[in-house]
Image (cartoon, rainbow, N blue to C red; front, top):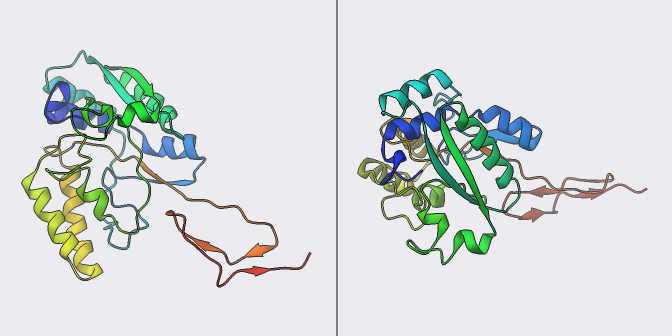
Length: 240
C-alpha cells in the first residue's frame, strides 16, 4: 500500500485493510494448510531470530470499519490492485478483493505477465514499484536481512510501499549488526511491534508457504530448504 499518495496515505486506511484479511483462511484455502500464518513482518517462524511471543494479528472487521470511518472514507473508495501472473498470487488477489468489500474498498484487479509487472525494476518504470496497491511474492532467504532492508527501509530498492520510518531503519541496522541470536530476537520483537503499530502499517505479509519436495516411497533422509539446496549425506534407499 503506497504510504505517500492516495487513500493509503492515511495510516488508518492501511490498518483497516490489514485487519480485513483472514490469514488462517488463506493458509487453509490456498495451501491446504501447507503454509505458516504471517504476522505482517518478514520474520517467518522458520527464522531462529523471530520473536514468536509478539501477538498475532487477526481479522477484525468491526475495528477496520471504525478506522475507515475515522479516516473519512466510511463509504469506501475505488482502487486498482496490480499484481503478477505467478503461482497462487492471482488467487490471493481475489481473496484480498473479496475481503476488502467488507469494509467498502472496491478493488479492480490488474493481473499482468511478470515482464509487464516488474518492468525495468526501477521507480517510475515499474508497476511493481509504482502502483498504489500491489501484491508481490518473495522467495526464501537463509536470514531475513534482505526482506527487512530492500522492501521496507527508507532507501530500499524494493520499497514499493514508499515506506519511510527512521526508527525502523535504525532498528534494522542494529539487527543486521547483532552478533548473536538472543540480541537479534530482542530486536526482531521491537521491529515486529513497530510494523504492527497503527502509525507504521505499510504492508501485509499474510503467510509463508511451506517448501515441499517429492521423493520415491523407498527414499528417506533427504534434507532440503526453501532456496533449493539439498543434502543427501543422510539419504537412504530401501531395496524394492
